[in-house]
Image (cartoon, rainbow, N blue to C red; front, side, top):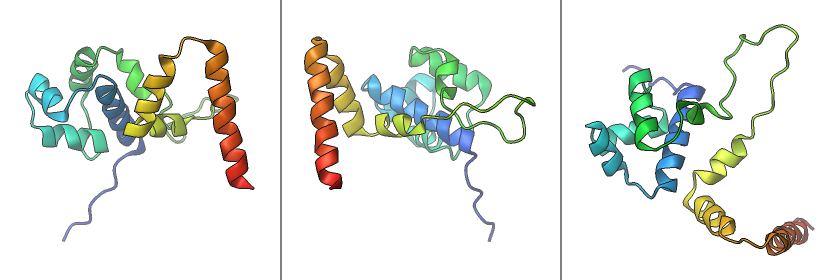
Amino acid sequence: MIAKKAPNPTDKHVGARVRMRRMMLSMSQEKLGDALGLTFQQVQKYEKGANRIGASRLQQIAHILQVPVAFFFEGAPAATGQLVEGMSEAPSPSYVSDFLATSDGLALTKSFMKIKDPKLRRRIVDLVEQMVADHDK
């Protein structure tokens, strides 16, 4: 029996960003698959990072999801051993991507962005921070 190889961290990140953007557009895996000429199972494998997305396919996905290709790499883990000497790696806010990849995170973000009053938005942030502080006691 052949051991299953773990997905590459960059492939997983790109897949998660595809999923996040697809969900932001309220598009099903089936609809994205149809636009690409693939099954929804293949889209599922891309989103999990189980299958690597080729360059031309990623360009196709970017066009369908109306984002630049670079969108899928924002916050991606750095390739090991490829930093230029003297340059430090910027911290990756992957927790934001992870949060936005959930249906609750996406719904909360969409609703929050519809609130136009900055003072009300600030009060909501204060409320949530206070709830967390009270919970941690």
